[in-house]
Length: 260
Image (cartoon, rainbow, N blue to C red):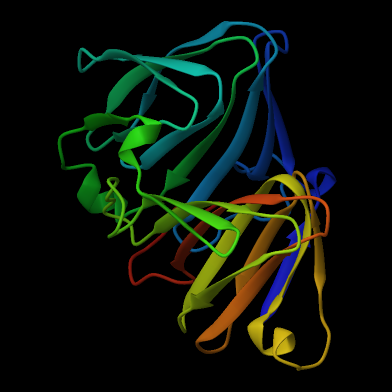
């Protein structure tokens, strides 16, 4: 197992307007200088923070599956399909942009959100009609056990289903507790630390193997890969909980990916 951790200084940067919205980008667009260019079909990941209410005007998308996941605050959406909606803390907007759609988004002051792009087989999805769907926090299943709270956002046990092979969870780990995830052969796990401090390590190490802890703090981006099916354990430091948003995708896919 290989665990790589990238600090905010190794991630891309961006902004809108005169800095009303600022972005840290664990996975940026080409030429945005993020250390990680992609993780399999996980094409783009930005953490946007709005310092003032600001609308990003109408702009086009096609092919990609795009999720806006609201960490705190309110995000408004309007598009050329006729949708005009808002989603608040814990909710998500999903655009499967297909043959093309224009949309605008407005972030209220103090809003923080992830915008995440997944790359399906673009030559196929650009032939499909675009769609928009919205989900409130209460629509996502939540499990709690052993000091760990798991909110399922994307995947077979979640309301959001994508064409891209992907699963996404929002994890809260109580201080001093751990969450383990079994990573199948051929898959990668990408995780952003939303808050707190902790470590990531192979499960076999937790069971007595050699030490190779990777330290984590707010804003870090961790990418976990394996040579076979293995489990990774995330552990919250004593006295401080750890919140992660984690996405599992294939490390490689059988269709061509956009060159970055």
